[in-house]
Image 1 (cartoon, rainbow, N blue to C red):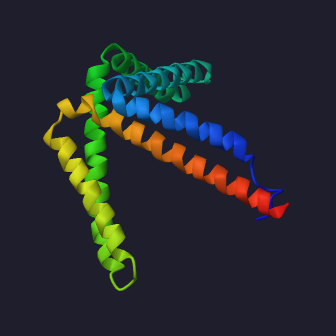
Image 2: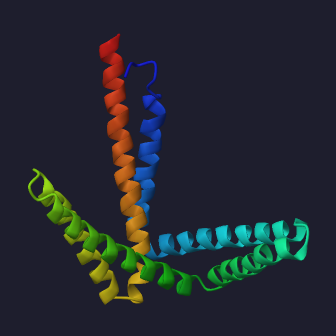
Image 3: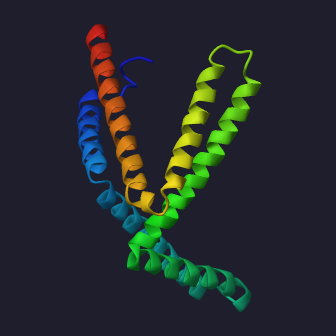
Length: 180
C-alpha cells in the first residue's frame, strides 16, 4: 500500500481521541449511556415504523398495503414503547446481549476444538470462554445488569476503537514520514 492510498492520519488521530474520551465517559456513567442507546434504538424504530406506514399508504391495492402497514404499526408502537419506557427497553436489550454472548461463547468453544491441531486454537477457546462467562455474569444479575451492561459494553467498544484509531494514525504518520 503506498502513501497515496492512505487516509489522513491527523483526522484519524482526533477521531480516535474523541472516541476514547466518549468511551471513558460511557464507562464512568453506564446507566446514562445505556439509556441513550435505548433512546437511539427507539428513535430508529419510530422513524422506520413511520416510513413503513407511508410506504403502505402509497402502495397500490390492498394486498400491497397490508403488510407494510401492519409492520409500520408494530414498529412504530415498539419505538414509542421503547422511548416511553427506556428501563424496560434497556432490560430487553440486555437480555438480547445475554443470549448473544452465551450463543457466541458456545459457538467459539465448539469451533476452537475443530481448530485444535492449529497453532493459536487456544485463543479462540479463551475468547469463547470469556463470552460465555460474560453472558452468564450479565444473566446472573439480570434485570439489574441492564443498568450497567449496555453502557459498559458501548464504552469499552468506543475505547478500543479510539485506541486502535490512534495507533493507526501513528503508524500512518510514521509510514508517511519514512516514504519522504
